[in-house]
Image (cartoon, rainbow, N blue to C red; front, side, top):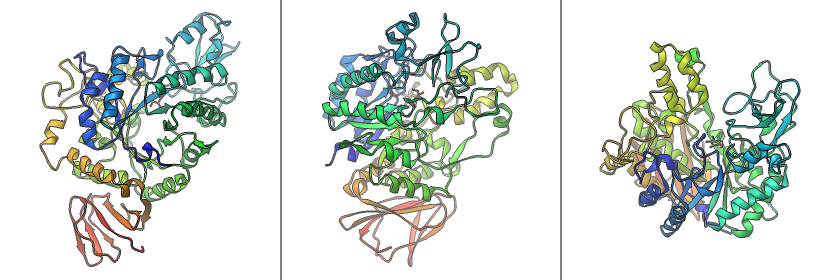
Length: 560
Ligand code: BGC
């Protein structure tokens, strides 16, 4: 049976950065409402909102202190309902970011749990005791340091936090926790949201908490096998989604499985008792990446290396994702999100910035699967330059301020701005007024310089924005939504594939390099391309593609 989300084209809105309607420097829900027409006109049909529940904002909303209320910084319940209604009226679906692995330490459950070992909520979280003055194991948190934090007034009693210490993990072993989280989710499904992005769901089951992870280091290590993709994740997930689908059988469950490979993604999307666990999986392993050689600054200060696409591994990776998922779902097609540096910073060719972005988008979004476009990507936004260590909102980065000599700080900040997620969370540049139409107030994230804007790109028929609109118009057609996918043999650094439906074929040819290339063509008479980037020319049975050029042809069935 066809579901609405079989045709999902998703736009990710980071609410604090999208549009500020009350001029406090922080984007809000009313701001999103004001920009719904823009989102619709882009050619997407679904919005994913990063978390807007009440939160102390230690991790920009992923630390929830009340799941039943909207954070006043973003608006209120009436505005949320209005957003859902207005989006629906425009034919847009709304996905909420549902944080189920942990809460904020300010959540009343945790506050109560802290009061006494006998609290009714103590067992909502994961506690362990030790008598040797050390945490129960050597596992490291994703945000640095140990996953264990000591109770402020009970020495030797530790609670577990995979992310920040102000974000204690829920104990999903406890049936009351499972029930409580189902209740919260039901509340939102009944409010009319069309789907949930399940944040970090692959971590809701943990391994033996007293087993150290093998390492030579004295420091805690991120011990993924101990707390990712364990068998009980599926058990808990199954119960959760089954209850929600009783209310809305068409609810879209988009699971964030950061470390999922294609097999795990297939496992999480397989049908159980007649309905899929998740409908699609966002994996951070969706594209093969290669670390660039370390810069001097990165070497000296142990900074993260920049990554680029591993073009040699790309064809295999595409085929694997398409094939392994074919029985259960379709791949999620995306380049970046709020946890990564921007696509234009990582993958674009600086010598052919716009053209490379257009060709990359053609290569990815016309494949079979659901695109997710990170707000501002459609303008070709790059990471912004942040000029203070504190601006990165990251404890490890903040510590550098006292370590890096003054003379070297600007080089370190520049490098960090290229690789860090916070530098990808800048406010949306709508026009060329002082705060770029985002707000009349200084935006929450101060950046150096101005960025290209929507207003500027609207005027230019050749802009990245106008190209994305054309590309998504093509993506919306039945051929590119439903057509069978087949990768064709092609020269190195090119990706060539077909989509085929009822005898109609879309032939997509993309050159992902700075060199011209000749791709041999099937024996067909091809007319004008439906969409093209850069320069192309057909000679005999070859298509010559200039650097970073691409072309999409419509044709009839052929044998390749
Ligand atoms: C979100 C992150 C967040 C983390 C903890 C993730 O996977 O995408 O932004 O920090 O979950 O909630």
